[in-house]
Amino acid sequence: MNKFAKVGLSSALFVAVVGIAMPANAGGDGFASWRTDDSFNATGYETFKGAPAPSHEEPVAAPLPVVSRESGRRCYWRLDAGASLSGKPDGDFFYQNAAGGAGTLSQIANIDMEDGAVFDAGVGCAFGNGFRADLVLSLRTQKEISGDPAPDDPIWAPLTSHSLMANFYYDLDFAQIAGITPYVGVGVGVAYHSMDDVTWIDPSGARQQIAGAEQLELAWSVMAGASYQYSDRLTLDVGYRYIDLGDARSERHVIADPTQDAQVLFEDIAAHEIKAGIRVNFHPTAAMVPFK
Image (cartoon, rainbow, N blue to C red; front, side):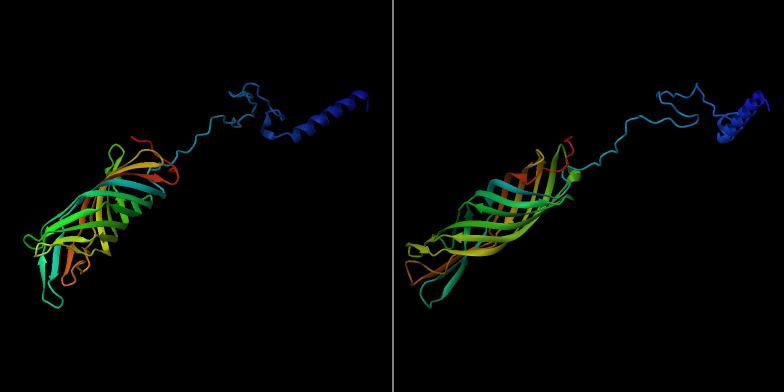
């Protein structure tokens, strides 16, 4: 075999081997066809024919869930102050003119009870579903109760009443207007009464003192009001409370005259109270919807 025949045979063998190694669909002649017309796509990246171009669009973040500004458990402390407008209690007066003598029980007429002020301090939590609860200590200024147990025998009884109440509220979020949320509530607790010595004009016209007394009574209340969340930590609150503080009584003892016994009893000590105050969250609210 001459030199030229050997070269031709070697070339044919190389072409056959390469043709077998390349994919059949790479080109009609058995070799990979590189298409210069679409080897660069619009993004400037080299691609094979039929391969998808890489995407360079910015990822779209999933929308955040809508979170109510009142949602989530949060705890707070509160301070309130306001007017305590007294109701008119019922009153009874017991009098015994001598040791062992017959006693009389009469109803006190013309009862009047002074108005005063009330100051609240407490702690509580909101639970994110419209419900709140707090424990509130209420201090009230002294009020004087006056009345007539018998004609021309008036009495004056200075009374101070405080309370410790467990309160439960429901915020009416569905009725919110301009960020102002109405609420309703109830409370139950204990009232502490301190009655100072009672001044009494006895049947002879002498001024006497009936010993005062202290006692605890069951108390209950109903409430309504509105609140406005001023910031993520501060809520403004205006509310009304009707509170029944139970009964209050003196000792059965005339201080300066042991020959006489007397005692006063006032039933259903109550007040209509109008208050304004603040609630301050211990920690900022985690998420808030801007006010509308």
